[in-house]
Image (cartoon, rainbow, N blue to C red):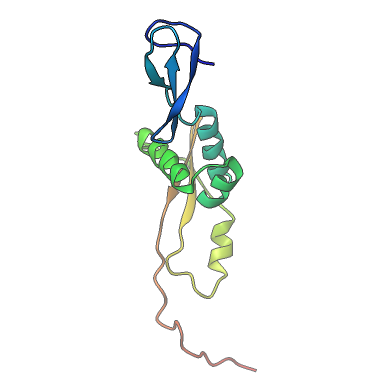
Length: 148
């Protein structure tokens, strides 16, 4: 049982469903109300962000957390928009490339690939995704003669 928001009495009974939410009626004052919708907890949203950063897709996260993949997309998009862009006035001393760069470089089709760049300043570390496109060479798709 819920308490009445009007008189704070504990004697509320079920009184139908309105727009998919349970409706209650207070026995003492007759006030009708619905329980306030609380939404998805911040803990679930944080888990969705962690799973996304681990590489899971929106639909997989939705199935795992038992929620809509569209909701997962909106949470992650909102979180990304709330973060300030990474900017630094300091000079970058070390740039480390992810092993994916070597893997992509060994592929026959490398156009449209992105690189993960990690910039490490003195006493500070940030990671930034820098999409880069590599143009296809002049000989792309042509049969090359090889010496045997």
